[in-house]
Image 1: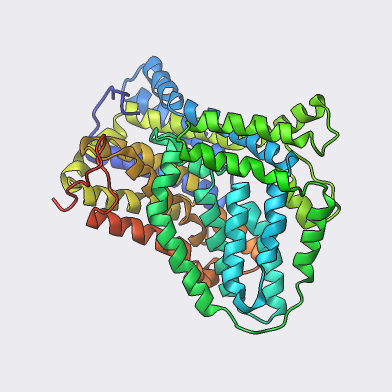
Image 2 (image 1 turned 90 degrees about the vertical axis):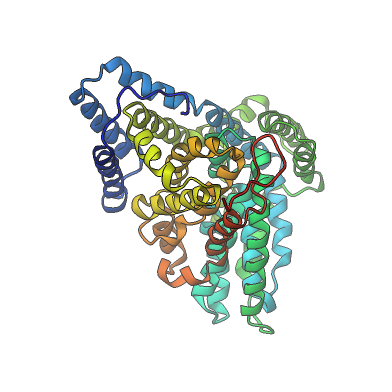
Length: 468
């Protein structure tokens, strides 16, 4: 939205008041009314339209602001479509089921909390959804932990940490794609750059859960065995199903553009499915659009494998379009530019800017309770300042994930917090101290911002002078 020129310059107090009204509308609707984000965003667009008319704006300018804002998300929309295709193709090729099946072999009661973290991390990376991971593998791990007489709070903390590590680092994740697209950074460049903060957070979390694990103790692994048996019955477990994963890693190493890499992987995965599937082209096309439906008879397995398809991404795509339209109108009305121009004098240095961006992402999560809006609003608001300071946009996309994506489950009234409490049976406040990865990630990204380590200038490999 850097190219959207405001048609007016409201006073600072007026701009802050408008922004607070919008945030209050969205947060009240999502937190109190438990509404999906789309409706309060549409209501916010109406509010901004009325404000524009009161200020004497032409409807043409209002419409132009919304359209220009939405146009900035076309790259993300295309990526989301291909992600839906990839998930479906990885299911029919057996890639996701095979990885999950062999992942269960890692389970050991002696290091239970660490294994719960590792298993949900693997699941999160493979399916790209933290909530689906928590609702399937997470529920199974909770059942085992309860049978062992272990702490449900620590178990839930390990599950949440692993699920959101996977969500953050998976090329299949909508938040990962959104963060990279909103600041126009290649998906795989974004993921590689996140490794600088994510790997230390992962190691810290793993060590903590190893230390907290119960040691030698007998436990019945029947629940996990049932899931593994269900996966085996699906007929999708094959050695060659690892090929799409190896191919994707190779394409990442070769720095192939994300959209092309996903397209190649979809084609190869569909081709692999013909080795074990009797589906014809008509059925495959249906699965690619509507998603794969698992019919193993094991509820946990069917819940885990019934997903994917272009259709499954429409919720996110529509939310992105509406949110970017809202952002475009806020820029066109001069609301965000006025606030940022005042902030630029206070956050003039790179370290202060990164710190402010992290706090903003956390703040939107706390106020609105929605991680998509945390990424979208913070990303759009800080692009100008990062560009002004010559900071590479991948610094911003990483900050959005470190302080936006993984913070949402720590907020009791957030979308993720409410969902996780419901499916795991452990309150957000109880598991919060043990969601180590979600706590460590924003702290590490803020630390890097102040030290300047791994913070890159645009078009150069030299660290910026963040302390100036």
